[in-house]
Length: 167
Image (cartoon, rainbow, N blue to C red; front, side, top):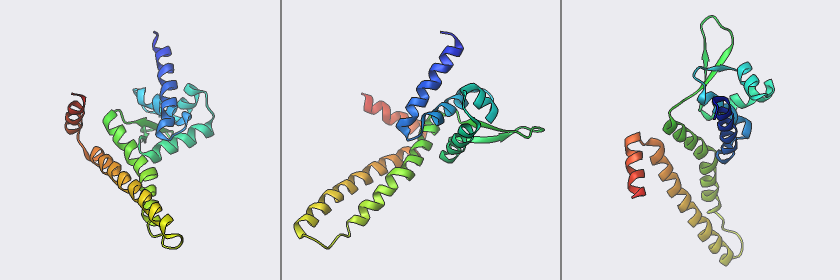
């Protein structure tokens, strides 16, 4: 397989995978391009490589920066902004986990805690509702705790745990 073919295949696959993280395909493709690029790229270079509009490139680069997985760089003597992705895969996974935790798990935990305050209505229905939402809350807290451990982990701890799970 030629490099250009492999590069395009990776960019397309990473874009599709991005939707599992809660990001759109263009964001995933831009991230893939920046991930495999040896040097930071300008918006124009991203546009040219992926055949996307300036608005699409700008909007998605900003979103990737909001996720904390792409960073801006300046080159001395050049007015253009350049962008790069961190290459540490474990750190990428931790950052995506942090962001998904903030965007998804924490709001659900707040809602589950809030709905436990229900006190008006049919008592039997309230008890059932509190039981189910309480169980969901406990499960969500356990997931949050595991995610927190992963986010705070170092490489050695993570791989030791992973190897134990695989045995």
